[in-house]
Image 1 (cartoon, rainbow over the protein chains, first blue to last red):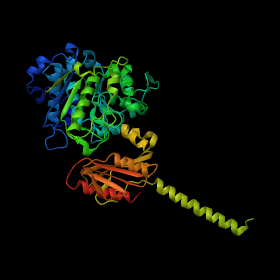
Image 2 (image 1 turned 90 degrees about the vertical axis):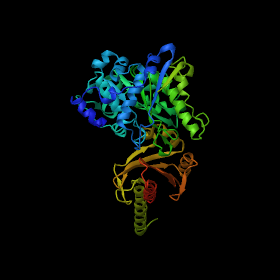
Image 3 (image 1 turned 30 degrees about the vertical axis):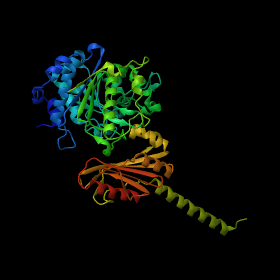
Image 4 (image 1 turned 60 degrees about the horizontal axis):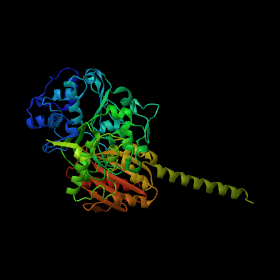
Length: 341
Length: 164
């Protein structure tokens, strides 16, 4: 079987056939597809958690084919489209599919032990190409080449292939962008290059914020994220996500919960590493973070650890992102429709 | 007043003090991370990166808060590989005093930690070793849990300890 790197390499040279075996595999999701076709039905925000207990097998690294299959399962459940390419087409505006640059914002800050998995990043790049996106219009990015290396990615600026480079190479805007307490300079990759960005955070406990997932990952698109860390990142996270380029371009998250740290994050803590073997998908950035918080809390409870509230760092920024001043999404569980497949 | 002999003695004494201070500075600023081969089986696979306290967020993001509160001065880090296979990262945090190093070590300690003899105090898990020595807090993590990982990490920890 080809690994994802080989696949991408061949994909950009036209050597690979569209419609891989994974895409052709029948998903037993008919009920889910019928029931949950509309992510915004009944005024609720839809969040999909897709799991595969066998994702890792005996290896520390997930099986690449199973990650691709899991992505397809998550997208099918989210969009109601069983065919993988159709699922992506139903989500991304045709204009962007045809010619816009789509960024894949990964997170490699925790180092190679706890960073967005390359298998997931490459699976999404593969499916985007099958949905009609040119390889060179897919840009995998993060803060730096080092972070990208931690995610298992290799720098590439060849426009004929899936591109990959960091803000350390592309730079930041000269003029700051502001919203509330946030006054930052945005990455040029976000501000200038990308028509949209798919957010690929990795689920982690966070010593300051409580947890880090979708919205906190946006700290990696600004030049000085430390200015947003005060008071447990509240309202830093909310204010940053209200900056128009962030709010309007980064509207879909495929969250990596393949592995995670449930305490001692955001760095790699092998003694607190666990394998949820899951992907979490949503458009509502608040709802997905609220859901992620509960995943972390459940694991902490299983491990006999106190809640984040009890240790003085509940992710209170999540409620702020949903308040009247920010209105970024839903954190009330009654307004979240959680679908688990 | 000083005679010529006294001046010479003063100059010599000053030179000795200056050289001593220089040597002290060199030792203090020297790379605390062992070179390849300094610890049996361990190869240093990256240059040492150094972060001042104000830039620590660039390396460890939200983790930097606890270090700043404990008085971190700087951090040095490098990657290593053991016998060409097991990969690890060593972080040496220079704190303002030993109290800061103690605070970090104790805050990261859990019931399943194994206490070992490295530096002033140390704990180990299957894939990590953390110890303090004076104002230094050292954290070593491995990215695999192959047999013998913990012993290899402890050996590397001793190698770092001797340089502090």
